[in-house]
Image (cartoon, rainbow, N blue to C red; front, side, top):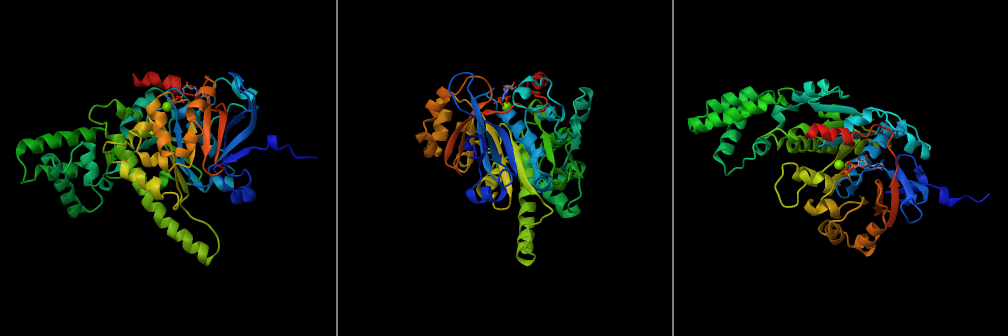
Length: 430
Ligand SMILES: Nc1ncnc2c1ncn2[C@@H]1O[C@H](COP(=O)(O)OP(=O)(O)O)[C@@H](O)[C@H]1O
Ligand SMILES: [Mg+2]
């Protein structure tokens, strides 16, 4: 009997060699190909995306287009990988809106799922919130797993300054970095905010009012319970087979804490990068001496919603240089990045030019479409505007442009197994 190729899934982001060797193992089922035009198009083959090797994926689309939903689908799929592969993959999601805790619950309505021969299920993810916000989440009975903190000594001078939006030009910035340096020289790597406060207090080169101002700002930071002597270990965040959600949404509303989410991303990104480089060396040695690929540290995916906040085109951001490292050289040591943004025009151009898998929900803003087209001329030859015009208006449709197969696909993203908290969550943000 002849094989029906139209029913075989399309595997994106995977070269022919891997396709022959692994087939559809280590992929994420994100949706189905759109086969006809109109608002209720006929759907065809399944679309699978490779998640067993690091990629730079960019998810675009206007607000409400389904970007966070698609991210959640990818997380659901990573949590359901074949155990052999799953144990080599870990994922960290930076949740800027506070919606991904919904993954821990089963979808409320499964009528869409039934149409797809799927069923509602919860997803095994670990949701961590800042320690200072734990009580709030518990009060609201949101399903979370615990708190995360940052280790005080891991913040370098530049990060402290970024926290207060200070620079080397500001006398406060100089005072702060002098104090941090002094504490480090005196006590090494085990110190807390109180130690920095006393170093500021005893600083003789600055005047009293400046010291007092800086101390009260440090006291405010102390009140967040985010930065402590002992911090969450990065190895806990990137453990094999685990998907960790770091909810930084609360800092959006806290006055004076706008820079906190940037510091969190910068520190996590930096630590993972450093560790991954070391393990990568170990892996290479093993590959040469024992001819096998094994490593304690898994392949790491970092997923960042609202990525333009951390990788802006024309603003400074403490997370930007770290993420640019991931973008430029991260794939070699096994660091994959999935960025979602409604403002590609505001995103650092490297994040667009280096991406190898582009998923775009509907976009209407011409500057945003042009930004993508200008950096990826090949995409423009597919006439994005025409494709967006043909895209059904209901939620969940997307174009997928894959550098590996050099093809453009129109897809419908599959319904989620787990609870879609995007509607409920918005109430918390008010
Ligand atoms: N594939 C989909 N199937 C069904 N509903 C979807 C789908 N994608 C998004 N939605 C719905 O559309 C709304 C907006 O989606 P969301 O992912 O929050 O958009 P964005 O992150 O792009 O602003 C949400 O309420 C979500 O439930
Ligand atoms: Mg969103």
